[in-house]
Length: 398
Image (cartoon, rainbow, N blue to C red; front, side, top):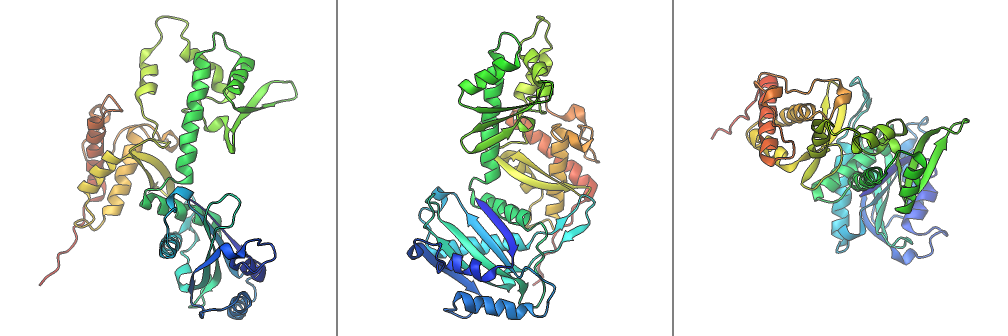
C-alpha cells in the first residue's frame, strides 16, 4: 500500500480532477464518491473551494490551504471491496495519519499531531487509471473545524508511515516489505555470481549480473576506477550500498566478499562464515516476521522481528493488565535488536543490559532456532521489566 500527501494552493484544479469534472479525465464515469466530512451533501468543487477559502481568511499568511492525498493499495487486496470498505480504509488511514508526532534526532517536536478527522474533506475512488489499480484521491482542508492549522512539515513521510501502519494491521504487504523482499533476492543473485567466479574481476562480476537480466549502471571516476554501481530490473532499482549484509556488496568490499566465498587456505575461519550464514537478517523482511518500530534515546528504528518473539513480549506485557505495556515492549525490542548485533550503528555492545541478569553468555548460540529466539526474547523482556518496572492497571470497583 502506497500513500502520498502534499499541501497545495491550486485547490479548484485539484478538486475538479479528483471529482472527475476536469477535461483531463477521459472516463469520469469510473470515478465514484466515497465520503465527505463537514461538507453539505451534493456540494460541487467550486462550493468546496469557496468554503475552504472562506475559512482561510483568518490565516492570510497560509499559502497552501489544502492537502492532497492519494492512497493506492495493491490490487489483490481490494478486489472485493465495497464503497463501505473504501470508506473504512480512508478512516483507518486518517487515524494513523493524525496520531503521529514528527520529532528530530534530539527528540524535539518538529510537527505536532494533525486533525484531518476534524477537517473538511472529500474522498473519491478512481477506477480509470491505465494501471487498472483502484485508488483513493482526497482533498482535506489545512484548517480543522476549530480553526487550528494542520501542520504540513514532512507531510509526505507522515502519509508513508500511515500507509505502512494500516497495511501491517490488515496483514497486507507494504511497499517497504516488497522492496526488502526484492532486495534479498537481488543480494542472493549477487552472492551467487561471486561464488561462481574462479578469479576476481569487476568485468566478470558485472557481466554475469547482466546475464541474469540486470541492467548494471557502473560509476567510474576520471581515471576509470570503479566507484559504485546500481542494479535495475523492471521498475526496481538497487544501490550497491543497500545490498548484502553489512554493505558487503559495495565496490570497496566486493573483492573481500569474493575472497570469503573462495578461501585460499583450507584453514578458513568457519566461524565467520557459519555465523553469517545462520544469522537471520532482521533488517529485511522474512516470513513470519513483523515490522516493528521502536525508539531509544530520541532515535527511531525499524526491524523485522519474528512473530514468536513479539508473542513473548505480548504475553509478558499484556495490555489488558499492564498500564505501561507500550513502553515495556519498546524497551524489550531495543534490547533484542542490540543482543542480535543488528544495530551496530547504535554503537552499543551486543548484550542485554538491565537487571534481568542476561549477559552475552546467556544468549543462544544458534540464531535461527525458534526455541533459542524465544529464550532470548524472555531475557530481553526481563531486562525491560527491570529497567522500567511494571505498572499494573487498576481494577474496576463495584
